[in-house]
Length: 380
Image (cartoon, rainbow, N blue to C red; front, side, top):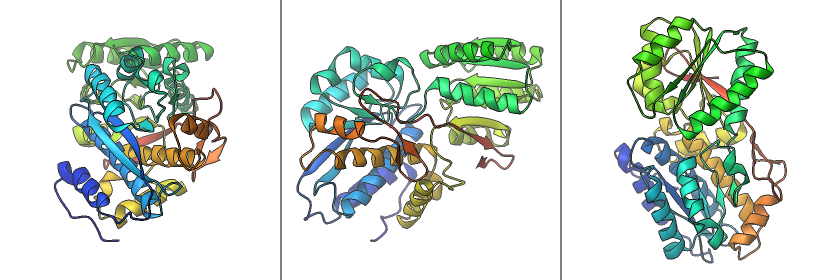
């Protein structure tokens, strides 16, 4: 198979999509449309595009091998810029114009809640796989199938690591968002169970990069470890502020922080930060599915840096969707796909196990911690 043409980073996904569409598919019966409404522009654009790239690569593999029951998979993507009103509009548009069998990779609890309030998914019996949120409330709503672990699981994993390191003086910084408040509530419960009282707790206003007051409060408490729950820009400002004050504490961030973007933002100042991840490490690549993905990236001539956590997550979500479709009959409809996904009990995709079932929408509780090294490389 020839390599797609090279091009600027911004155009690579478009070029890849055009190239994939040119692959001979005369043996495939029809298109099964999968939709994605996600931030391909705006503050979360990089991770949105990378997730989308990973999904496209997985669907390309399946189409090249004959599709699913002879059907071609076609990914139709729309950019909501991480604005909930746009999410609602574009999901409604996709349902009406493209009749997708499923949606994948939707971003943010508030955006998804806005869609649920309009009953768009329920009326269409449309499943969503790979929700990009650890929000607990979403776990019991509609046909939302979750591949990444909850914020509760992430906080537990981080606190376990702090305990292993002997860090008893813990400070918490959380952004004033739905995910920040939820993670702080989970942290309170987990710390109380361990009989630990935080030495300092600071709430940072949403998207506010003026962090001086918060940094001053945390530094004054002299913690051994800091739990940081925020988006990436706020996390970058916070870590930079703590480093400027020479705070020797370890910093642990939830998966709401994009490790690669944190490195791009801070460079060497990001070293020593550990970030919770919901998929295996694509850099260490010891899980078979991560190794397969890296080989595929290389064979397509794509920049190896694009083989990151976000793109691997998109690849894994797409592979899970394919497994569900394979169990949904020759002409899978939305309700068939729901049953197909529910049949994925303890299914190992190559070092990543997914476990759905009737009424069981949390497919994975996998959480690992990646550590940013002094060389700016993400390690484990």
